[in-house]
Image (cartoon, rainbow, N blue to C red; front, side, top):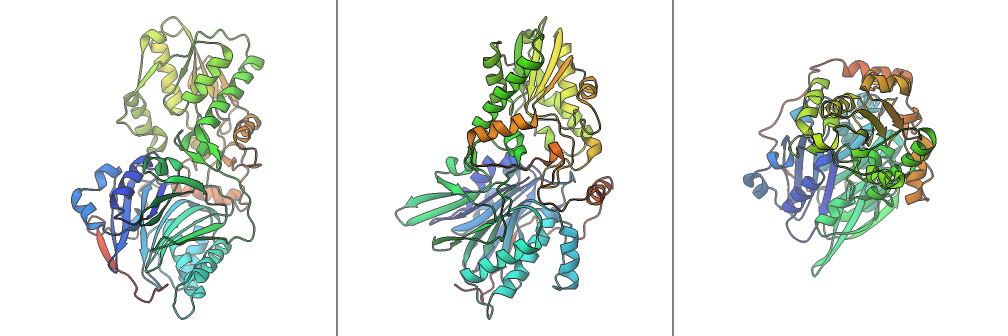
Length: 510
């Protein structure tokens, strides 16, 4: 996953984009970038690290213009930071284009070959986002008549991109001399929302991964970008949209609601907080019916994502809810840290137990999910060291048994603690006295209770059902083999701190 943000405003957008990326920081901590447009040029700065570390005053001064896009990067294959793969990406042929992408293309390698042999386009990095940019650029070149860009050509280019590209993608594109384009894959796997702010000078628009970015920046939530839909906002703030995919199925990623998204976000008509409350409700019902013999003195959440579920579970079981762990806010999310050793070490740095809440008690620890098991194993041990008599573990999500290929960093089955193991074997592995997983059907019902209109979800990490229909055993093996090759070289270097000004292609017109 990554965080993306685009704004077309009436005043300079550099501060809006910076503030919005900070709000979306939880979606990627590897690198960040901002691109703006004004005065016949694109202006861009990008680099490694958190948003606050990438941008300085001198960078912000150079990011001039009233429209632009931002990106915070999360490497989907667990790779270390590669300077050349920070986003946005840029091409100048046939038109000046800047792209920011959240998701993962499942046919990127085939597209890369096609682009080189048929479309005569060169890829400079290993990033699938660069592939996506070049596919769109080629389709726009085909659709544009006499190299003149208009809305019809742009929508045709999106339709052509949908036909060629497979996987999950929420995309923002700056089109030189025209405006901001946003589009989403035909399954709506990765989220994308639209907001509007009415000013005396006219309407301003924002497109973002999550609605929390709209809320904090004063934009009113309008709606989600629909699966397969393209939204086009020109530099004057004129808004239009079109369905560009031949076939669509609304199936948002379930793991967004379990873990990835902020609880104060609204996506696909669902409050993330409310879905997590419902997860706690269904999990409590399972404990009542399957493990009524457990004597639980306190329900304790693993901060932060599991709090809504844990509070609702405690209320329904009529058991005291307690905060048993204090979180260090300056340590990143261990789920998206590269490398098992780094994750294991960071658990102890991130959490510290409050001994009084554990000593002499039987405690039920509630987590949003159990992925690699590293965190769970360490936390169970911390609870025992703090004096707990029995430590039970409950997961608000089902066992994660399968690779995710749509933009979440869990592509290797060997790294998933539940892969090839029974629930009892997982319990032994993490050292808990009892282990309770949410049922997949119950998780679906929890989300549908919030928005009954969504009949299907992307649940591949739980059930191995890949909704795009193009994932084979050979594909999964290939990903795992590539992941196990440390230090895979990049084909490109870095420019001067990622800072550059780019002349817009003057042939791009309205």
